[in-house]
Length: 152
Image (cartoon, rainbow, N blue to C red; front, side, top):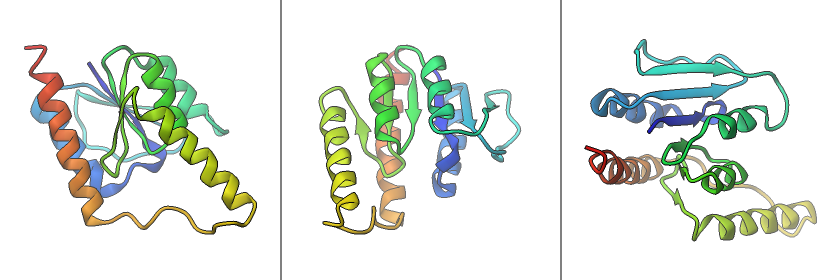
């Protein structure tokens, strides 16, 4: 198992939680982005920089992800693609995407996008909060507990 991160939009408050967990449970992690992302020096953490363009980083993550891996992303279409490959995905706000909920979330995303384009609603998601950080930490810890210790 490895952790792949859609690192172009990887909140700083979440980074520390993930970096510490990677060291604690000794899981390799790959940060995929189209810009330079700072990370602690560790044999477990690597970085792949991809070219600019829509979905270039997403496509690289889908190429690398394997059954049982975890992807950290706020991108619901990417989450859907990795789940289709047998991996797991978690949103930085703490939502674990599963086969049973990702298609619904994708449909809701598309509906909201359409409503924004038509001017029916304005704005986007609420600001990232301490509550989001706590939700992520809790869900991430539950995931690691369930999936890491299952393989020991």
